[in-house]
Each structure stands twice: as C-alpha cells, then as structure tokens.
Amino acid sequence: MPRGGDGPGRRLAVVLFATLAAAAALPATSLGHPERPTSFPDPNAGTVPKQPRGAPDLVVCKADSEERIRDDLKGKKRKRNLRLLDRCRFNHIQEAVDAAGNGTHIGLLPGVYREVPSRRVPEPNPDCAGERFYTQADGDAIGGVNDPTRGETANYRYQRRCPNAQNLIAIIGDSDGDGDCDDKCNIAIEGQAGRKDVLIRGAGYGTTDGAKLNLIRADRADGIYLANFTIKFSDFNNIYALETNGFRFRNIESKFSREYGFLSFTSDNGLYERLEASGSGDSGIYPGSGPECETGVGLRDKYGIEIRRVNSHGNTIGYSGTAGNGIFAHENRFHGNATGMTTDSFASGHPGMPQDCARWVDNRVYSNNVNLFNERRDEYCETDNRPVEERDPKVVCPTFQVPVGTGILIAGGNENLVTGNRIYNNWRDGIKLFFVPAAFRGEGEDGIDTSFENRFLSNKMGIGPGGTARPNGNDFWWDTQGYGNCWDGNRAAPGRQLTANFRLALNDCPGLPAGPPPSPGNPAKTSSQAPCAAWDPQDEVLQDPPGCDWFKRPPKP
Image (cartoon, rainbow, N blue to C red; front, side, top):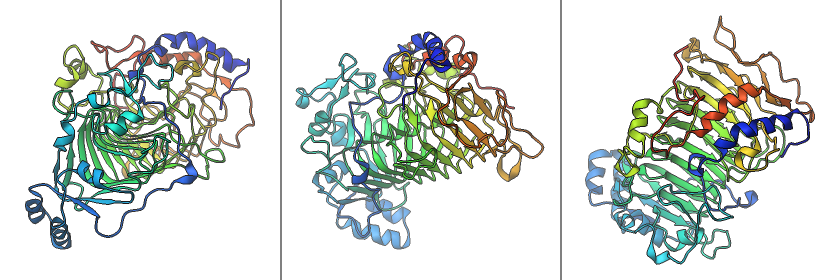
C-alpha cells in the first residue's frame, strides 16, 4: 500500500534517505532472509494439514532403536514402537522420503538420525553444475546471497535435481517446474515416541564435515506435516518451508541453528504449534514474506499462518518476520532473547512489502535482555578471529541487529494489532515502533509507506506473574511518524503509570481517520535508530556503529 504525496511525510523521507543511504548500501547478508525469486501459492487451494491417524506407512529406525524403546518407553507406547520396529525398512529419513508417494506417513522410531548419506553429497554438487545460481550480480536476484560463504542462491532446479547438496533431508514437491506440488505432497514425518526420543542431528557449521544449510527443507511440498522430534545444528535453517501451500510444525524442539530454527517464506496455510526454539543466531521462528490478509484493519477474516503455544528463548530474536504479513500469533512465550518479537519492512528483496496485518494476542513477552553483542561475544564471533567453520555451534553468534532489551519491535509495519499481551521486564522498551522509508530497501527515494494504523490495545505492561511490578525500561517508544497508530486500554502495575517517549493518551483509539496526511514524525527520534543498520555480522572486526546504542544492555529499571 504505497503512500505518497508532497506533504510532510514525503519531506521526512527525503531527510531520512540521506541519513540512511550509507546503511542501505550494506551487503544483503546482514539484512535478513534472502531467497531465490519466489511467488505466493494460491491461498484458496491449500489447507493446514491434519495430524495423521493410524500406523505410519513407512518406518525408519536405527541400530539401537530397540534398546532405546525398551529402556526409555513404557506401557502402550513401548508396545506400539516394538510392533513398528518389525516393519522398519529404512535406516535414514531421506531414504524413506525418496520411497514415499503423495500422502505417505513416515514414522521415526527412537534414535539419532545423522543422515550420513546426505552429508556425503558435495556442495556445490558437480552433478548439477549446469543449473543456474542467482548471485548479487543477477538482475532478478532476490535479497542477494543465501549462503554467505558461497555468495550465491540456488534455483529450484538445483534443489530438485540435487536435493541433498544443501539439505540434510529434502522434500521437493514440484516435478515439472510449474510451481505446483505434484510429487511428495501431503507427506507426514512424525516421531513415534516423545520429541526427546528422536533426534535429527546436523553436522553443525563448516564446509568440510558434511554441514548442510538446511536440516529439513520442504520446497513446494504442499501439505507437509512434521512432528514429535528434536532437531539441531544446521548451517542456516533447522526447518524450512518455501513456496509451500499447507504446512504444520507440531511438538518439535529446535536447537542451535546458525540463523533460524523454524522458517517459512512465501508459504500459506501454515501452523506453528507447540514448538520450542533456542540457540538461533537470528530467530527461533521466522514467518517471513507471509500471505496477504483479506479484509478489515487489524481484524482480518483470514490469517494465512497461525503460531500458537510456542516457547522461544535464548535466540537473538524470539520471533521475527520481514514482510511478516497475515500472521496470527497467540498464547506464545518469547523470553530470554535479545529482542522478543519483531516484524519489519527493513530488509530488501522480500515479497509482500511493506509489512502489514499481523495479529499478536495473549502472548507473554518478557525478560528479553540477553546481550549477544557484548565485547566478549563480538571477539568470539569476529570472522578474522574465528571463521564460521571453527565456531562451536552451541555458542550463539548474532546474525541480525536488534535493540537489546526490547519486547516487541515493529520496524516499518502497517495495520498490526497487538492486544491482550503481557509484556514485562524488558529493560529498554516494551513495544517499539518506528517507520522505515521505502528508499531504505531500494524501492524509491520518495516512498513513505510505513508506519500506519497499528493498534496497541489492552496490553498489560510491566505486570509480572501474580500481578507483581516487573517494569519495562519504557513501555512504549514511537518516532511519531504515520497516522492511525493508537494506544488504548493498556494497563500498568498497581500504583504505577504507563511510560512512553511521546504523549500517551488513554482512550486514544476512537476510530481510525480516513486517509489524513501522515505525521512527519520526529526526525531526531527516527534518525537515532538509523546508524544501527550499519552493523554487519560479516565484518572482520565487529564494532558498534557510531551513534547506535542498541547493543548496550540498558540497566535494570
């Protein structure tokens, strides 16, 4: 929804463009999640997959599965897994995927799945040398590079012909390249015990030990269902759904991904459910380039991706989504990260810009004060001091810049509804909102298309468990740019008042105005955030950009 005109909003964009120009020229690797050129699936053609019933069609096991079943399982679960063991015909998950047809249910018995045959596949794979890669020099490239160590992003044909070059387990569903799933559709991969009993283990980082960018990649794999296991040690994403119409991630723990734990991109009809995500260099969960909503302002009839009962902690960001549109997130916990939740129009090359229409309801966002940008961590993560392949994958090196001590950050978003959440003990800001000009992501110098019609309603600010006061450093921060942004019914702890860096009036949402010119905002406030964009995780020596205070943990309020 581009906004324009010659009013104060346009003048502010021109002023800020000069401030942001240097940051906008950064390498794309520091600006979020890049991919090949992609398109959204038809939202009316897909549905969220249901949990499969009955025994699996194909069973995968390891040499010690029987011992694990007898030692670790009890009762009906033990008996069921022993019966399934008699039907086991595969030792590797990828072997079962290769043998599967549409609608196949694959069961995983207790064990550690290292997928050794997949690790042995080289990357780049000479068997697919004739396929094209998108690089930063290509005019139709999106976002630049997918793998910073190789400087190129593989096209779909490469994934289809050489599925295990970049992926430990690959479900690639479009056999004829027309964009629609016709092979490996509606596949279910499900652990048959508790999620702690089945471990999918990557090799970690590096390029010589079988490390893979993605541990599970579902690419145009409509109807994919993944459940009941633990997964760790990817070189990019632990679980990745791309151009997929219908996906469900259920009861999975993701640990120690160099970038993302669970990621979806230009996908629709998705459900993140009962997940735990920790140890991600960027985000525990990332619903990026989400589908468009249908009607209304903040009260959409249809949200394409739902996120519920997720516990995301110990990451740089608990939840993030560049162009994170059409997201309904509720009953989640985002805590113990550098920043709890973000959505933005910040990074270039993401379909669906500018971001709009996320609905965040009844989440707990608290204690997001972990400083992964301190001097000791910078020294460890500097590329000239310790290259990626030499790092311990259990040490989180941040790959995206965020303001430490922030609960929720909306960096250039529209028509988002944040309501009924409990947000406390975030030492910088509980909720932070500022606009991002279109020029920053290369979409024209004069574009003013954020931030508009964001509503913050009935949130409990600085109220901890049991009603105790656990104050945020500042409940609300806003650069005052845009129109229709409003705050209504938010509450502070008993005996305390809400805090904000602008005049915060109660009952401030009487109805959204119909198309007034945007407020020019406060250039000093907005430009105070701009220098932080110059931080780059691939700098040989990591330093805080001059004028940026994001990477210093604020004192406890």
